[in-house]
Amino acid sequence: MKKGLIITLIIVLCLGGGLLIRALLLPLHTLQQGTDMAYGVVDQVLDSEQAIRDYEWFKQQEADIRKCLENEVIAQSAYDDFVQYLPEDRTTWSDFDKREEASLRNAITALQKVTNNAIEDYNARSEMVNHAIFKDNLPTNISRAWYAAGNLITQ
Image (cartoon, rainbow, N blue to C red; front, side, top):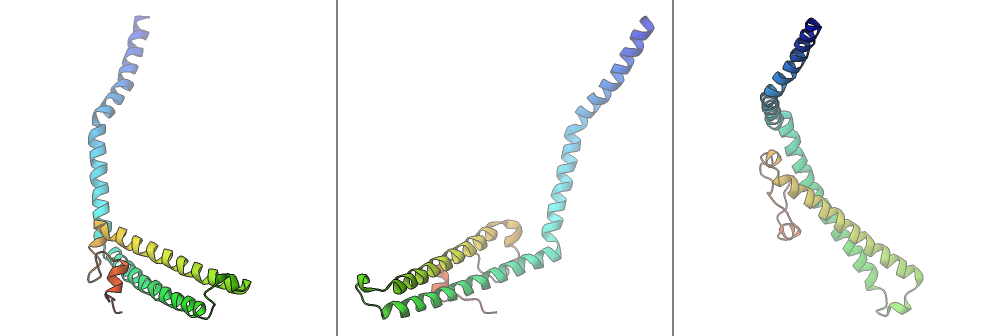
């Protein structure tokens, strides 16, 4: 009986001892994984292909924003051209005129939302350190006012 108890105690100590050693070494293991992960992030950020992708994204996004703003001007012009021939009293407008005016107004609003989202995406990514370093000659932060001042990037 004593022999069985001693064997059981030895088995429990061996199993428990392994768990104790793992528990003691867990912080070192976690630190090593964190260091490996940090090196992986640095490698990814400084990877030449990633740098090219980031620069191309900023360049494409800036061009898309310019195009969105141009589309807004075209839509506003179409709206203004349509409305200028309508009577000032809306009660005299036909149903077609009312629907067309609403459609043109909605198109302008939709284009403004698309442009605002593109500007927000650009500026948000521009704030991220791991992306911002690849913008080169592109603007740091863009806005409608920036474009209104004539700050257009030429391709």
